[in-house]
Each structure stands twice: as structure tokens, then as C-alpha cells.
Length: 240
Image (cartoon, rainbow, N blue to C red; front, side, top):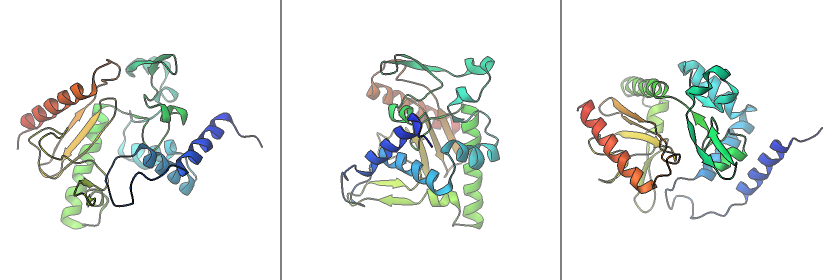
């Protein structure tokens, strides 16, 4: 049999991941790691015998009826619907405008499907996902404290005292990108290009903010100020 260039590239990336040195001893420091999530994606594929694209569809998007969520959308949508996919700026490495493909170059090298990046969605789908997580969390608090969402909301702490939820980012301090006005039981995720979702499990509300500061060529710290203001305003509108 023959190995395709794409498969060879994926194996090369996996080999490099496995030889990366640790930046700190286990348990010493909490730090987000693209490499860690890429490796997790490989583990899921090897352990199940299925691609991440298939796992996402079978385990999440189909059961929750998230019709606009998935990897590499241009492979899935008819040409007449491709105008719904927003372009995300010019890539000098690829020498073209990016439409329906990830901004992240590691994800691009992996064919647009990776454990750390590559999923496209819409505000309506993310609202549906957030609503589902809120509903499941309430059921688990009342009936089953060992449920999936309560597991993801378990607090972890490194030896320096920094905290995070097991499955989500969490607001930390007055300068948090989640803004001001949410409860301590708020969890979410930030995308590099400018996407975010925050869910206040304590008060039963959430914020979805989808934009792309990379396409606009903006300064990241300046954009983060916009994030804080948008999220703070959203919590105010949502009420306590």
C-alpha cells in the first residue's frame, strides 16, 4: 500500500509532538497548549478508529442538531451556500484569501481537522450548545453530581495558585476577557481569531461573540479591550 502526502504529514507532526520537551513539570503550571490539544486529537482518533470530523458529527452535532457546525465547511455545503461562510483574510503562506479553512497553520497542515482548531459554527448553533450545557448542568446538580458538565466544571489549580476549570477557561480577575458582571461559576472558551462563548452557569445566561480581528489586521491587545467591553455590556443587558 502507499501512504498519501497528507497521511505522511500527519505522522511527521505526531512524531514532532512526541519529542517536544516539557516547559514545566506536570502540575507545576496551568498554561493553554495547542500542542496538548493536537495530541489529544490524535489520541481520540487512534483510540476510536474514527476521524475527529466523524466523532464531532456523530457525538455532538447530529445529536444536538447543530446544522452549521463542523470542520472544513466548504467540503460539506453546496456551492450556492458558500457565501454564508465569511472570509478570514489573506494568508501569505497559502498566498490566497482564507474562506472556509482555519486561520491556524498547524490545523491547516493537518488538513483542517485538528484537536485544537478548525471547527466552524454560527451564533445560533453556539447558542443552542450553550443552552444544552446549561440544561444538563441544572439536571446534574439536582440529580447526578457525577455528570459530564459538572466534571468539566471541576476546578484545577497549579502550584502557583492559578485556577482553571477542567474543561473550560474561567474568568480570573478584573481584567478577564469575560468582562465584568458574571458570577464566579462562569466558563467559556476563546478562539484566537476573535470568537468567544461564555456561559454563566450560576445565573443561567451566556454570551456568544463571533468576529475576526485577524482579517481586519488589528492589534490583539486592542481587540481584547473590545472583547471585555462587549462581554460586560452583554452581562448588563442579560441582567442578574
